[in-house]
Image (cartoon, rainbow, N blue to C red; front, side, top):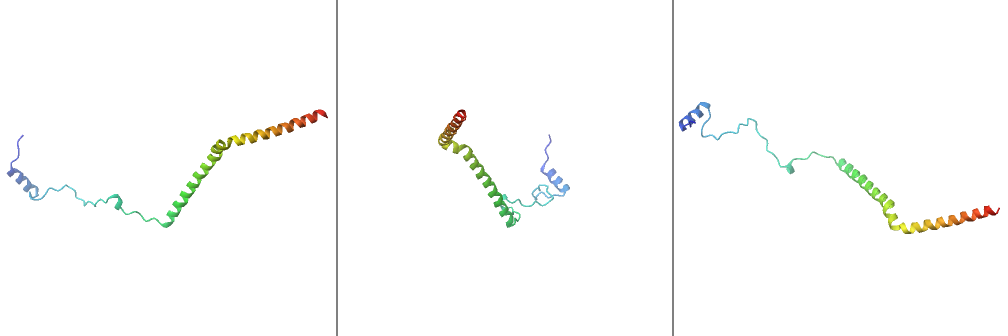
Length: 111
């Protein structure tokens, strides 16, 4: 493969209209805007009302979560903690109603 000599290279530059002293351009015809880092990009203006709307949404979400935890506590944790006491009270109520029922049945049988 033949190599070009320096004279041939200079002649090619002269015929193309570019000077050999100029640095080669990248071929970009349009000017490039400088790229700003993400933290320097200006943010769009947000009115103060949107901040209050965000706080309101956050308050509603937090209230919902608190309500859910409260319901779970009442339904599952409280019976586990106080389950023994409630069972005893319910057994006493059942025994009292059973004795009352048996007393009324005995009384009905006498009549």
